[in-house]
Image 1 (cartoon, rainbow, N blue to C red):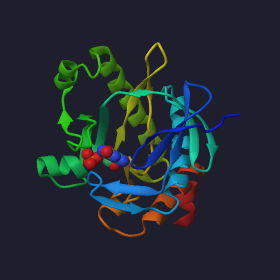
Image 2 (spheres, rainbow, N blue to C red):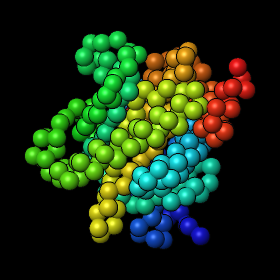
Image 3 (cartoon, rainbow, N blue to C red):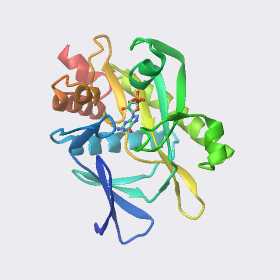
Length: 247
Ligand code: 5GP
């Protein structure tokens, strides 16, 4: 039995609650959506339910591929039990296709295939808009050790390979995604944290390039709920079958 205790953190999309076990917390998914550093705010109906289910499925899949994550188990529609982490103040982005921040940064078009994929570190700071940084910034600021950086980088590429294959089987191109890592327990074991959902990944339908992610909200493209539901259907369906059935 896990009892949801005191709320100790509320972010833009999720709330964290304590449990009777100090090593475990409840991660609750809200419907709130923000973009452009919270300048744009809104609600995506049932996003919390969908993202909880997608994250549950993807954390479970990644654990099967040997990636160590904070995920313990799904608790209910909107919450999962996770290991308590001290979050490393970094966001990792891996890009397989140009879009968003990289297209803007370099003044290039979206949709160019990146081979090899591009790995980026961002400093996790809402006030600064999560700026792009390199290893030297991290080491000089002592946000993580060289050993931790090497570990996070290699885990992130394992995640990219695994998720690319997973979505490829579901007729979806994994354009890019963001990961966060944290340290668990007295051994400071590095674990993949946060969530993995259409809020944190760009997903394009293979062939049509229809956007199936938060860009529909960011760019006012409409059919936001439908896109999230579509990803959920493809994630929980048998590989290849959901899209094949509709063609
Ligand atoms: P970009 O740097 O192009 O804005 O984002 C790259 C990828 O990481 C996208 O899939 C985007 O959804 C995700 N991402 C980057 N930063 C954040 C963030 O602060 N919050 C969320 N939800 N996703 C982010």
